[in-house]
Image (cartoon, rainbow, N blue to C red; front, side, top):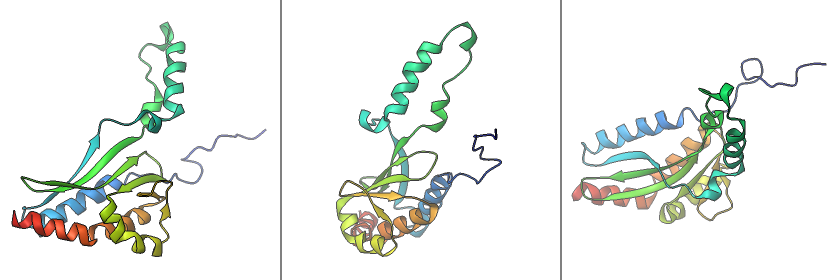
Length: 173
């Protein structure tokens, strides 16, 4: 019999989301320098994730891990924490105001879901559909399957009329 394991170092590499945070950090720097520090962008974790977004894997892992605990399980951690989904928001702000452009459910591997502000989405929808970014089940949700999809989505959102308007207002306040 042959090995049934699909080990990433031996087989094709996995499509990870490792570049998302560096991309957003770089874009945040561009916004801050382009506005002479008057407007900045924050990519921050959202702590309250609804239970239905956690999914059965986490629920099952908690139950099965507590059953497996014993003398030989001490010092062993649940590996599901290495593959946890986190919810993030991306905001633009100045010292007085903050505007959330999108939220995303970020896991270590693509695909991930992005949830756009409705006004931003209204301005960006055509660009997103032209680039074949997949629509999600919810009206403001898009499914991002690669770094390229992510960059296309950011470009569409950042150049939307609503975001440009808000940046202009934040600069004047």
